[in-house]
Image 1 (cartoon, rainbow, N blue to C red):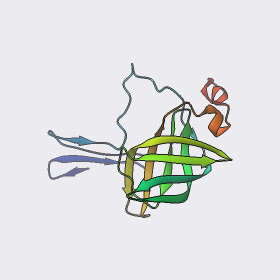
Image 2 (cartoon, rainbow, N blue to C red):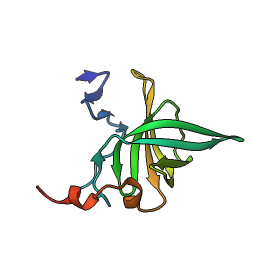
Image 3 (cartoon, rainbow, N blue to C red):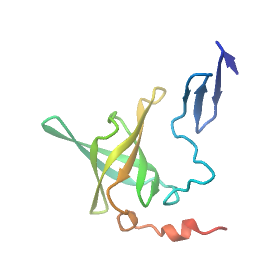
Image 4 (tube, rainbow, N blue to C red):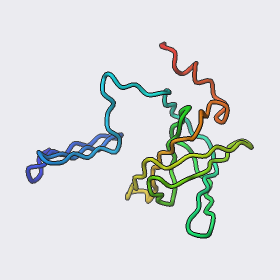
Length: 136
């Protein structure tokens, strides 16, 4: 679709807007030589998200949309600035990390938040990542 000399393409999972000067994509594609450290698994898990906002601690019960050994994506009602320190609690386990991505969906008023963990989360998620990494 063409709009004011800008190319706009939409799909259910990605939005890309580009012109000769700028390009925006919620998550840049990986180059053929760049590999992820861990597979992303589409999985809905209930977690409690906590973060400091000024002098008070904010807490929200949320669900993940994807998980990996080194982070996750989740949906929240609150926007969190990239760099914000967060804590996730799941099944009596706790892990800390930071927000690396935050994108509001105006149609649902929910925010997709990407969290990078400070440590490997294999034990935290209680998921066999090696199973998901094997070719079919």
